[in-house]
Length: 135
Length: 157
Image (cartoon, rainbow over all chains, first blue to last red; front, side):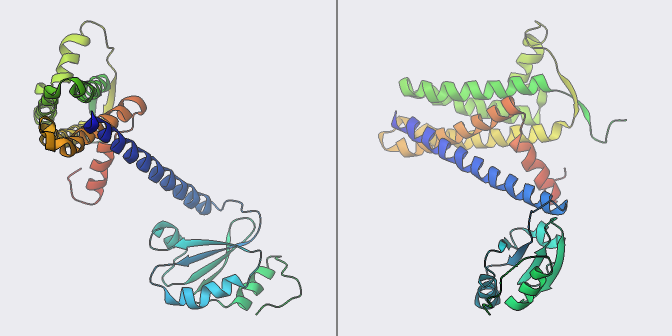
């Protein structure tokens, strides 16, 4: 009896894992489709393309993004999400894309984009950072 | 005009085949609790699937459909313009996995072989689950693998 129980347990685990992976794949596909169709985002946000081996991303870009309080930053692994990376012609990391409230890309920054530059781009889209400078 | 490679495939035959796989594996798994030699049905299933892949007229479950179920009107035919190769590939894959499962499941008769038997039964159950998914939801994982391999040039799809 134990062999049968172990077999059933193993298959249940495999099926649940496969279902989880499929949900994740579907979620990614929906996200790509939404961006490709210029889906409405509600407010400006940043698409941040990064990768495992990108040192500048960790040492420079991420601290810069942390200086933008209240701004939505969607982190994208450019290797794992190649389709999305190709859509924005991401040929180097980091790349930041400032997206408008209508979900359309407004500014694309190839390479490190300092916080003041991103703040200026977002301010041009109506994002209010207040009067306190955090640079 | 039909697209290149399309033929009339009776999907009812495929469904009967999938039902045969699911039922056989369930009989093996449940039956082996009470009667261990029931696992000997697994190599038979593997032979049926592999023979059916390379010589469709030897596909037992499909033949049951064509010779018995369809003429008797028990199962209605459902001809669809489709390619038979992905379905054959899926069946062959099921046959190979079932053959591997048979080897592991054989050890169920040995007191020390329960772990190996569990692996064998799990593989057989996986084949049954995939057959059931195809039967119930029309999603053929083996066909997807066939198309993916073809896309990567690993198979002449």
